[in-house]
Structures are given as C-alpha cells and as structure tokens.
Length: 391
Image (cartoon, rainbow, N blue to C red; front, side, top):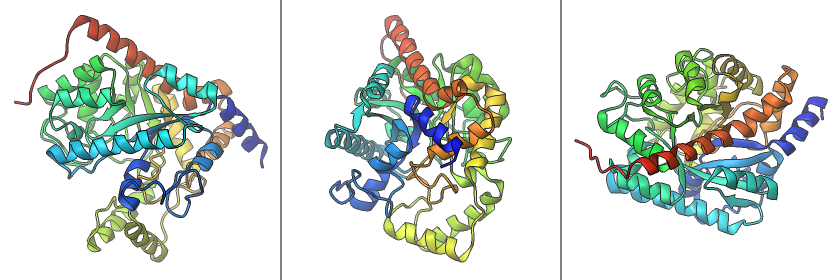
C-alpha cells in the first residue's frame, strides 16, 4: 500500500464518502426481482454487482443515496408503482442489515449514522416521470423518504427537457417551475443530472434551495450533454448547490464516447435496452468489450474533472456520485464501491488538502441537505401545498 493509499483510508475513516447515486435497487429488480436471498449483499457479490456491504466498507462509504430509478419508458401509473417498489426494496435492505445500514431522512440522521459507524441510506428518485405529473405524488414520495428527484432521465418529459432528447420546452415549462417550487417546500433536493443545460439554468433561477447534480461531470473536460457547462458550475456558489462527479467512462473520457455508442447499438441489435443490467445484458456487454477493446478511464480521469470543477464552482460545491450498478463499464481503479480510496489517493497526490477532501467526501452533501431542510421549513410556514396541475 502506498503512503497516499494509507492516507486516503485514514481520511475516509474520519470523513467518509457521501455518494450521490447508486443503482443497486434497479439491479436487484432486474437480476433477481428483489429476492434478497439470491443477492445477499452481506456477502461478496462481485460476480453480479458493483455493490455489497464489505466493499462499501472497504471503500469508506458513509452515506449512500440509493437511486429509486425506473426506466424512462415506464409511463403513468406504471412509473409510479415501479418507483414505490424501488422504495420498498431500499427499506427492506435497511431492515435486513440494521447493523450496517441506517435509514436517513435528514442531515442529522446522516451525522448520527456516521457517529454509529453505520452507512446512512438515503433515496433519490431518478426522473420526473416517476410522479406522473402529480404534485401530490411528489409529496407522497417525500413522505416515503425520497430526498431528491432528478427532474428527467434520458427522455424529455411533459414539463422538462432532457440532455439526451429533443427539447420541447427550452428548459422548464411553467408546471416544471412549479415542481421545483414544491420540491423546495417539501425539502426534496432538485437534482439536475440528466437534464438539458437550459433546464439546469431555469431550475437554478427558480430554486431557493441548493440544487445537486447527483452524477454528472464537467463538460469542459469531456464534451458530453450529460455533463455540466462551466456557466452552470459558476452559478452553484450563489445557489449553495453541489455537483457530484460521476465515474461513467462515456461521461468522463472523450475517447469512450464513440465506443459507447457502438456498444449501445450492439445491445439494441441483440434486442436489449442499452441500460439492461440483467445477467444476459451484462454478458452481451462483456462479449462486446472483449471483441472491441474499450478506451480505459482511470481514477486520474475522474480527478481531472474534479480539479476543473473545484476551480470553476469552488471547493464548497463539489462531491462524488459514482453511478455504480447503473453502468456496464467503470474506470480502472474505480471498478466498484471499494474504489473510492484510489480516487482520494490520486487527489492527495495532486496536493488536495484534508479540509478540501473532507468537503468533497462528506461535508458539502450534508450541508446541502441541511440547507434544503431550512428552506423547506421557511416555505411551509409561508404557504401550503400547491395544487397546480399540468395544463
């Protein structure tokens, strides 16, 4: 073990990682229909998943936003029901492993979990299609414990433009702005990963609480629409928000963008959704990678993004969102949730201070959630729930 590796592990023992986005719930749905006996994450699941409890411990993870994602082609009540099933499995995981996981609904819960040596388990909904255009459904998700919502996934929805689909609203519609205001009132953080740059700018204009990017990197370093433009990063300081750099190779390494497009086309040629994480889907992905060697991102690639994001947004406005179990491929050194010490060691070698790294791993995310709670208390004292409808 290098001296940087040892120092990284020591730092993470004091200031563990808050990871903004992990798709374990969807992988459990796709692989075993939520049969946790078949994917007991108390044991090594490296043959099937990026995530299990021993590797979370090895990685120095102290809090995880579990994504309660459902695919963008799920619509209406189907999307709502599937989101509820995702919430249910997160709660089942917490109940099954009480010595390791603690459900966290507030910043204080996160700090209590850290003091207890447990992993704070939070939830984030991925895609506004999950609420079926209903502010009451949004409020219900908050009551069930969801603490952020990504406004879109890969598809533009009825009230917000996605980064990877044709724009219909040039950002947020009037109803989309009301969604943001109601999220502020509830205490649900607005997540701007996946949305178009215009949607990012509109949300920053409307939101009175910090926004987050749960798993997005810097567009200036890798020109992909899923990443954050510098003018948006510059606005995070005034907003108090946090941009959490992701590890997905096609978002961080320019050479991986074209290769991933070919891999996605290969999945579709096999009759599979390009985000399929079933055993069959992963086998197709591995076979393609074996026949077509892929450009390799590394921990240094991700560190390049973090260097840039720190310079543009400021050290108080950056974090980490790996997107494990939501991507077929990962960088060398960041193969799974045990890899965070490799990234911290890389940043230590780049002379990041412990104070800066503590903000990156733990303090910024906790501060943003706490600020969102403060805004929500003030908003609820000022007004009741919104009953605006779409159209």
